[in-house]
Amino acid sequence: MKIYNTLSGQKEEFVSLTPNVVKMYVCGPTVYNLIHVGNARPAVIFDAFRRYLEYRGYSVIYVQNFTDIDDKIIKAANLEGVDPKVIGDRYVAEYFKDACALEIRPATYHPRTTNFIEQIKEFILNLEKKHFAYQRGSDVYFDVSAFPSYGELSHRNPSDMRSGVRVEINENKDDPLDFVLWKGSKVGEPKWESPWGDGRPGWHIECSSMSRTLLGDSFDIHAGGNDLIFPHHEDERAQTEALTGKKWVSYWMHNGMISVKEEKMSKSTGNIFTVREALKIYGKNAIRMYLFSKHYRSPIEFSSERMEEAKSAYSRIARVMEEIEKHVGNDFHVKEDEFIKAQRMKMIEVLDDDFNTPQALSIIFDLVKDVISTGDTEKMKRVKFLVDEWNYFFGFDFKPDRKNIDDLVEFDLKLRNDARSRKDYQQSDEIRKKLEELGIEVMDLTDGTRWRWK
RNA sequence: GGCGACGUAGCCAAGAGGUCAAAGGCGAGGGUCUGCAAAAUCCUUAUUCAUGGGUUCAAAUCCCAUCGUCGCCUCCA
Image (tube, rainbow, N blue to C red; front, side, top):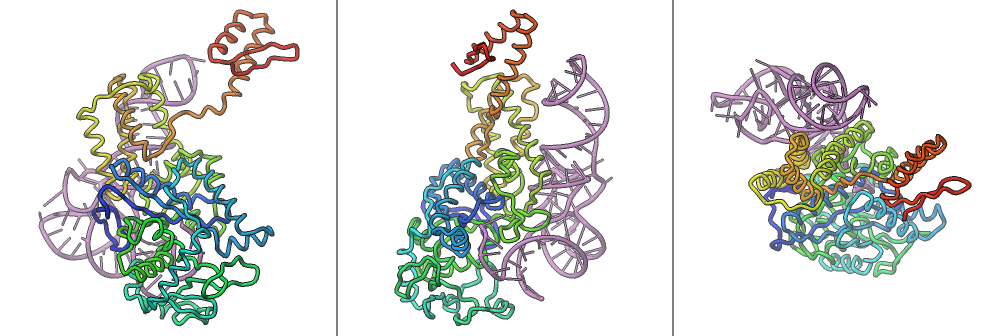
């Protein structure tokens, strides 16, 4: 299997640190409001990739964090006059609602920053001992100059960055590239006791500390949006490798951004489309199809045209799957013949190549193309078998949406009552009998007709 | 200004030296089917891969330049 590694800038053969086990850390959302479609991309893609790894025989330890202490959370809390924890708890819960609706599987661990304060403090303390950190007032900073390979991940040159650096507001730092590990508390902010005075963790330290606690000093894959490469991941890497002296992450995977009208979808620009809205309008299958239909590293445009297109593409597969089920049912055995092996090999070949989901989808479209019209039930079974097998990582739901069943029953009852008013009791009784067969009990009361499930 | 990515049919999108006169999806047009509609199905829709040079027996794929778009350099998935 090959994975594009941001660190080397090329595709590399994937070899896990421990045979058959993959340890993976994905940067999760800062919980101060509902997640948007841009946030959903890494969540869906890397969860699907993790499932693919499982499909390929790995057991995967998957960590996705929540940043539940940060300026925006504090701001939101102050605005509402509640404790930041209330905001964090609320939006963690909301996140799970969206993730679940998107068919994203929960991670093995979902650590939250505020539960790791002790580990974070210890981390910083050890950096200080090793002279990678210095204190200014109640703040503690990481000394970038002490870490020679700083800039390697984001392919930047520290001295270039210093010369092009924007006006630095913080006079405390020795070097504009240095970043904060621990922030001294200000009035009205949540704080924790520490050797440097009351304060809270800086942004980058949490991922280092939590991943180290849960996955160890070194692990296989670190993933997130490519807007995190610098400074977030660069800084995480610096502080972690400075502390342990070991190579931290083997493979860095970064997804491309989602844009709206040629501008990045971002909470700060405000051009966001929440997952909740998207779910309501297009449904989870269309969203997943949309995300899989372009390679995860490329930027992707979000628009109603794209979403409708994805929805149509999804429906094409779903319809065929439904049709096959009508022909051959659900309960059948398929012999693993050459056809199945060949198709499976094709699928593995493209997904093993840096998770090429667009190509993977084209294999399904090819399979689905004319199975029904040929009337070949053996072929239908094999196609369904394969698509179901691959659905382990695609996570589509091919079951038709039956939410409108109430309306459907009401409509049947209307037809029946039309028949009754014509005194066409043969017709009306036939409808009632059919509904009864389907488990629906019809009752003609003096004030109208009612129905209920038997 | 620095760094990086990208530019493939009406639209979306794979392909990364020969098997490419370039997958797949959406859309559009035509045929079959059909009481009508939908679905399904068949056919058509890039002699060409932003532009200009170069390397090579061979380039959409490698190199250089130009134009254009996006991202990062500040919080961001």
